[in-house]
Image (cartoon, rainbow, N blue to C red; front, side, top):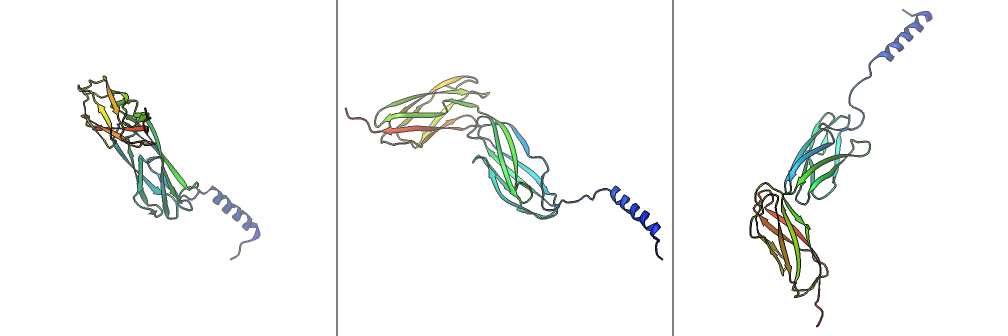
Length: 241
C-alpha cells in the first residue's frame, strides 16, 4: 500500500507538530556535574575560641559521566577538608568533611573551601562558611612586644586581661621556652566582666635579631585551658658604659 502525495504532506505536518509539542527529555546532563545537596554556604553560629568544629556536606553527580574529584583548596591553615571518595559514577553520591579550628580567632569569621573537579564549568566549586568566635579570655594587647630589649637589661610590658565568661577566671601559671621571660599573674580570681593586669618582665640572656617565641598561660576555663601570647621584637647587645 502506498500513500498518495495528497495524504503525505498533511501526515508529515502532523508528525512535526506532535514532535514540537512533546515534553523535553529529562535526565543527566552530558558530562559530570557536582550538586551540593545542602547548598554552598553554612554557618557554625556562635562558638567558643579553641573549639574545633566539623560539618559534613553531601553531594551527588547529576551528570552522565564519572565525577572525578581533584585537589581541595582552603583559605587558611585553620581549615581542613577531605572527600569520602574521589570518583563518583553518574547518579552516585559522596560527601566532603570540613573542620575549622578556632583557637587563633575572635569575632566574625568567614572562610572558604574549594573543590576542584571535572563537574563544574569553571573547574571548581567554592563552599563558604561563617562563624562568630566568642573569646571568653580577652587580652589587650594580644601579643608581647619588646622591640628595644638589650641583653641582661630588664624590659617591662603591661597587659590587661578581661574575663568575658560567666564564672570567675583564674590564671594559674605560664610556660615558655624563652629564657628571661617572666609573667606576674593576678593572684585573685577575676570576676565575670572584670579586668586585671599581667606584668611582663623580660631580661634576655643573648642577642637575637628577631624573636619567634611565645608563652602559654594556664587558666581554669574549661573551654580555654590555655591562652597563647606571641612574643615579638628583637634583642641587641647592651651598649658598653
